[in-house]
Length: 289
Ligand SMILES: NC(=O)c1ccc[n+]([C@@H]2O[C@H](COP(=O)([O-])OP(=O)(O)OC[C@H]3O[C@@H](n4cnc5c(N)ncnc54)[C@H](OP(=O)(O)O)[C@@H]3O)[C@@H](O)[C@H]2O)c1
Image (cartoon, rainbow, N blue to C red; front, side, top):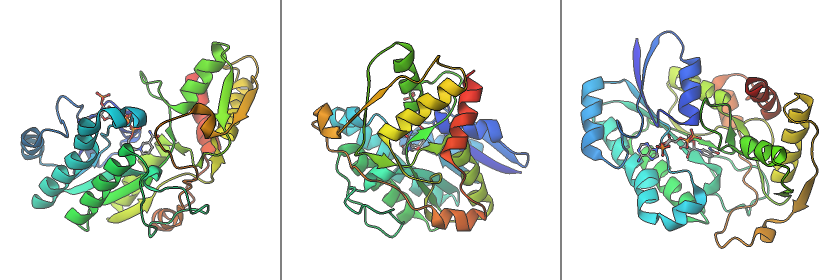
């Protein structure tokens, strides 16, 4: 029986791992209080107590805008924490699975990014996440990093995904504006959880781009969410969405515009197609009913 410790135990991806947890694995899900990425001694103690064969690190500081303000804390969670955890795991021969982000790229390429493309982060969140994934990959060739984007899915208490935000705005009758110049790949959290376990079982190591099937703009993603939600009876009708450019929001922080990841290496490794975000969306909306 393989023992797996999952960090960030109360988060979205951890919830999906909990839901699919297959027989043959013994999972321990630890929240921030029990396994804090900023506390080395606590992490070392937990690893010694639980003696897992693998750690799946879903914990992260994901509030992209707040990272610019809470620079030290976000760096401690996204960069230094994973680095410390990766070396603790390597010392004890524990495999570490970690998650990166499409935001490590600057968007200049305008065609899908492969694992061989060089990161060029544009903001503090992206720089911290980039440093974290590099440190994990350096610590051991057996460690695994799954780079993903626009993760969405159902969670019993958490409603912060883009799908929830758009539906909330529609229900409250707020005017909806969404960007046509930001393009990435929505990724259904249960699919990401499934690929994680498949790669672990296949003893894969290194970097993988782990996203669903195709790129879409925020504007089209918002429209599709509303159309599908109306079809599923979650809202009476799909309200209009106004297309805008990201410059409309006057943000001080730079965000990449095009960050579609090429999932070819993942598909080859797991031996089946990565699945579509549209079918993931339908499943999520059915759960929300
Ligand atoms: N969601 C996306 O769109 C997206 C996109 C690209 C990459 N990713 C990556 O995918 C992975 C999984 O994301 P997710 O969507 O499951 O995130 P999530 O739902 O935000 O979960 C992250 C968890 O980490 C916890 N955490 C924060 N600081 C911590 C610390 N110091 N020590 C331990 N735990 C801490 C949070 O707890 P609190 O709630 O108590 O703060 C939260 O439960 C992350 O690495 C994320 O960066 C996500």
